[in-house]
Image 1 (cartoon, rainbow, N blue to C red):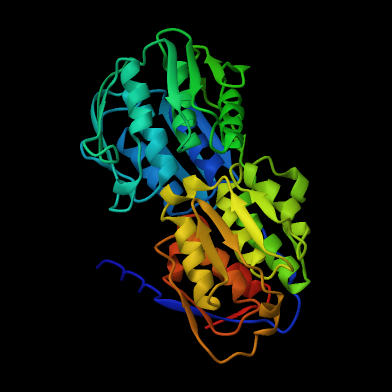
Image 2 (cartoon, one colour):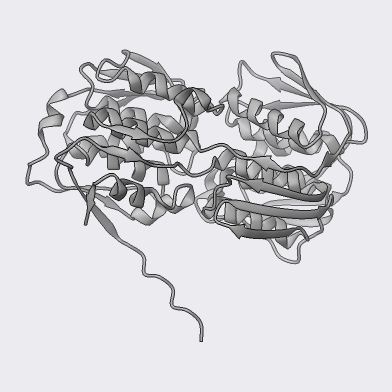
Length: 425
């Protein structure tokens, strides 16, 4: 007999707490670092122990894909992966189905080029709308047979076990994940590989720095030659034990909950200790309710929904710029945030090109006892659900639809709010 599948929770109503949120909450491990470490450990010869890791839908999809390619993965506890590999990936007998996990899809598209055989990288319908062609163009320039009929997954890679050498150019304007994907596969080049950016700048450059730090921890030799170029030596990787820091994107919700309620939430890690780009949002959250008139979200994109919901309660309006790439995340987050803010109060936000303008209304802080119900559509996007839960801390009758979508990166989010005294129905 098989166990029954847990029923999916359709909606969750948040009851505004009548007290500041006080307590200790340990955020989950970083999704970004966990998926990087899983891949690098799979490409290393030996056994690596990854501690402090995130166990969520996205990391499970990555781990399962690696297992299908012959990598041994054990999970001795809730925050540890033990990865054993001979340093190679084998051709899987079925497509790698990666849901809507952008990191896993982009990273593996480059990594499976090292497989001697055919690999299909695919995902759910929403993933099939997320562009990947700039990465494929770069792979083809290295002599790799990489195609996607629509420029989005599914991707077909016919690998020969070779990754080429020399200089490869990549347009990182849509996603820094393309650049990270190339860099992580580059130590298996036939010679040194230089990865050079085209275009004006790189989306979320800080995530490339995370990639390089993880690569070096696993023995790679990678250096930044100039603002637009990195050089990677053909060293491969060596197994290592690796500690993963807590997720800064997850921490933004708790930092925002603290300032919204005048509370004191101890994360066990000071704001300054995070190395992930989204940690920069902490400085802006500390400024509430006097957040700046213009916020450039280009280097902390996953924190923008958090900041935008917080900005709705600010003393003055806030314009978010540099966020065009939010249109190709799990959903079009610019439109989603504007639409849902306007459900709370018409005219609370609007789009101007690719900018998001939040017309702050400090009066929202007095809406805890209102009788109207606002049903927040989450678009199967974990960050929309978690960010708009913050509005429910101050506004009565906020209902989050499809609350289980937070399992993508923070399965314990609702339990964390309950532990701080928030009533959820």
